[in-house]
Length: 19
Image (cartoon, rainbow, N blue to C red; front, side, top):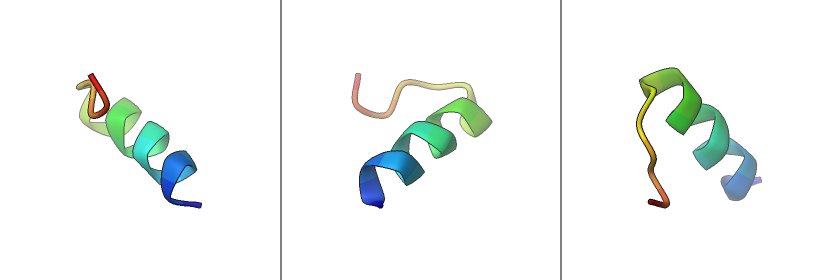
């Protein structure tokens, strides 16, 4: 699940990926 990974990655990096 790319979307799930994006959300988790964003939380880990503490930065909005999708913006």
